[in-house]
Length: 218
Figure 1: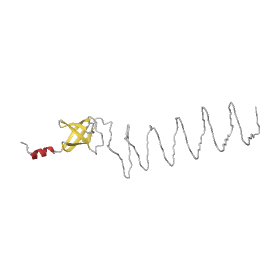
Figure 2: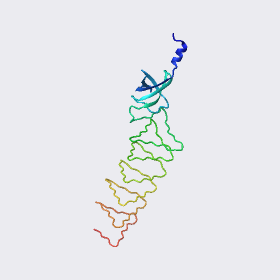
Figure 3: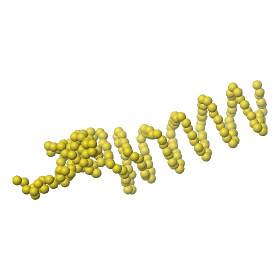
Figure 4: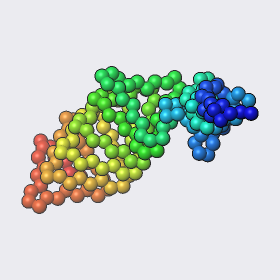
């Protein structure tokens, strides 16, 4: 007959086993097959790598009623890995840089906001894509060097204190109406200037002046 001391010692034998993940339970735990039985293990807080079915994992606990999945030892599919936490996740490096590098794809996904705080933020890539509903940029200065720029949209508005554009060739095509309102307009061409329309009106409230060595009308 088993004594009470023996039962107490048996019920609190520590668990350290390697097993295979069968599935993820609705409560967030995992069903792990090892030692000839199926264990229910909660993921340990330090196990950030999300186990997948078929992964070899290490489960450990003080007794069979408290077993934790503490590490993924071998991935069934090493081509994909997901790091997951229940709450806020902070990656912090004191006095050094943080590098996210992947041969194929590195994905950052958050249920709330994803923030990057650093003295310097650098992105190096052959192709960069941003897909979002709204973009807000606040900066003291913006410097960009590009070989080609294309902008397609429905409306474009800019409120500036000063606008300077320097180009070798410039062409603008407006399908319907173009309006300019300014305090003073000064157009100067080095060679020729041409104004043509089916109906052309030149009016002035005080003075209209035409000055040239030759003036041809008609």
